[in-house]
Length: 213
Image (cartoon, rainbow, N blue to C red; front, side, top):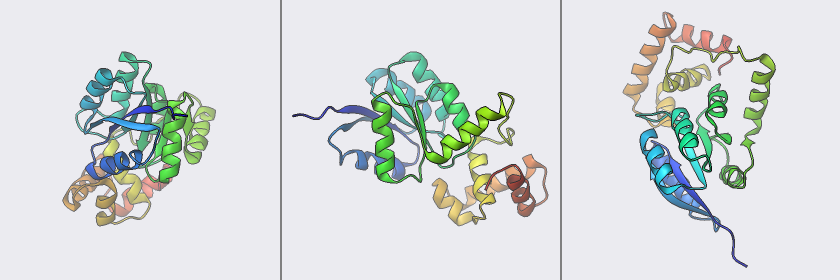
């Protein structure tokens, strides 16, 4: 008896993670990669051309972020289901749901959990990692007026700030985000200016008081 297969488009601007996920999907009998995108605009184009069953979408990408790319894909091809992946279980989960994503899973999930999430979304289910489900429930309970902390920061800057709040140093943040140490230093400098704080310690304190870290 043949196994039903689902067509998957992988969209992520980090080559190592994207290729790793493609390799992981290649070990399965039921998930077939039909395309790869390195930015949001390419993800929208390929999704509308290929009409896969599932798009695995990174949140932070150049050109067009994963949230807006999800919104455009869902509007153009409602039959395509989007599973959003992020480095962090942050408030962008609410934005992803609002854009039409059928699931949101952190990249630190195990390979088995990631595959299970993709399969669940392919079958029409809505899936969130355990920590994200709890956060989403808290957001809903808090009402529609709940705001994302630090809206003045870009998604990448919020990711860097959250990792700062965890006590990570620049080299570790650079490895996690797939960017150069110099880029991290620049991000930290921008964060300090935008948050109107004097130094790294003050930024970390402000982030932790807002619930990051």
